[in-house]
Length: 235
Image 1 (tube, rainbow, N blue to C red):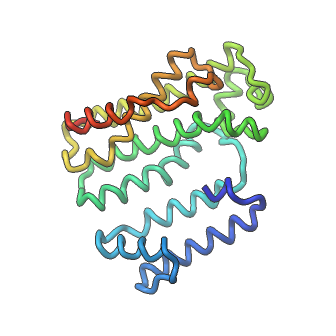
Image 2 (image 1 turned 60 degrees about the vertical axis):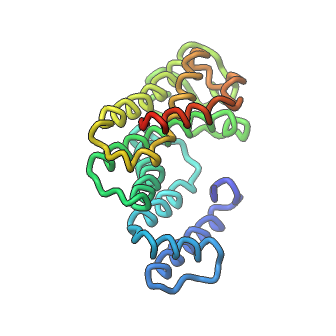
């Protein structure tokens, strides 16, 4: 992630401007001689990818360079929609899927992915004295950023995590409710729901302790779960 690899916002903005110009050049059939750009140009040509989704990802990453906590859960969901969901829309295009139900499911899955990513990254961010969790939910439970920096285990801190995790679970539930209407061809794009649900189950098992060591451990059975869901043609 660019935000993580630069120390100054100006450098990050320069990189984002490079990718904006690169996408413009790709869609003008004049990609720069840069390996990633060339491969992206090939994918755009082969699958007729929509430029809007690529630009949404870049624009949202650019706005996110400010390193500020999300003001509310809706702001986090908007970020997830414009990044994770946009990636899923592109994946559906690669799979040759043009379907309103699939797009609707992709929107929910992308939002769930963004919320889970924010939760998973919290221990790492707090180690760098940063907290990005939605401020409205923290304020609702009387929790400050300092509580997370100190790894406070009080019930109100866990309640914040419960509320945020519940929102991710709700998006997964909505996405799966569309299962019968989504073309089977789209299912490979949505298999990430297996990993998202795995994390949400684990955080529930540790009573929403965001700093519990087990949450940082890999699930060795995850590949098997992915295979089973793929075989069952479910997501």
